[in-house]
Image 1 (tube, rainbow, N blue to C red):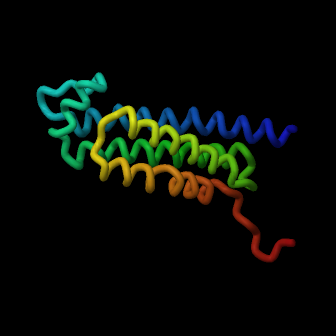
Image 2 (image 1 turned 90 degrees about the vertical axis):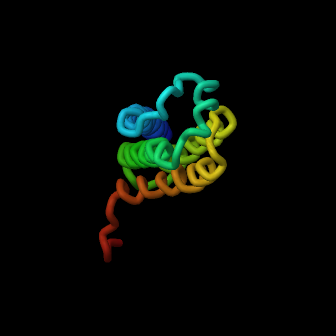
Amino acid sequence: MRAFLKGLLAVVLGLIAGSAVNMGLILLGGHLVPSPAGTDTSTTEGLQAAMPLFEARHFLFPFLAHALGTLAGALLATWVSGGSSKIPALLIGLLFLAGGIASCFMLPAPRWFEVLDVLLAYLPFAWLGYRIARKPRVVGAA
């Protein structure tokens, strides 16, 4: 029971940290790569109307936010859980992937971005977070 609660805490903390990184990068991206002049991206309707004016550079920070948010969440979840199991990092990756898939249906974006985002931002970066945070194995130890 204690291991389950530790894993649950790890996933919850990972979700919080990953979401904070995600939101921070989205906000930073809006300042570093501003939307085209005269567009209002504060609503779904405004974002949809502005989408034809967006260039590839406008999708850099959303991708980084999704990838690095997942990485941070998986890294923290692996660290909090003790690093012996991939499950917390995998759950972070799957939960963020579910959010990414949901956003494909809710927010307008070019198909190329949606495919790139869903295939490369979530599960690969969750795995990377696990690999970075896990405890190193001692070679030759029994």
